Image 1 (cartoon, one colour):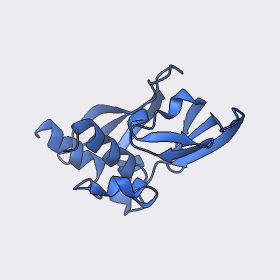
Image 2: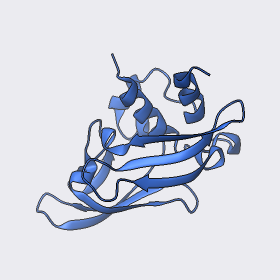
Image 3: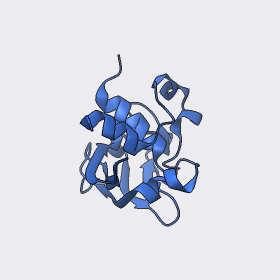
Image 4: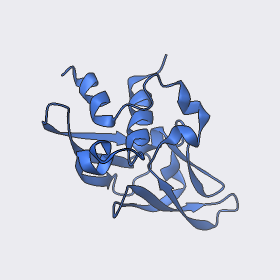
Length: 148
């Protein structure tokens, strides 16, 4: 059985900048998108204020370590990946869609610039396909979780 945190992580990251009609774009449904954690290992958090299906705005966040890891110095979608143990500093680029950019240590311990589009992770990592509602927009999932 999937934990709520894992399910939300796979859906949040999957919904971020998912190629879809404008009305379901993460950037169109969420604002004040930021990366928190202050550089502390295990604390890299994607935070935003998003609108639910009833038009109400609410704050939400998810620890990205639950779904992103570093493999040979490249950011990848990996359940419980703990990417920020070997990737710093990291920033979010939200100029046209949401992209996580970091310097990550490769297998030799050499820093390497890498970026990860915060799009549909199921195409990159089949282990995420078992989530029962992969293509539902983040605001709809989080609204269900809140019991709205």
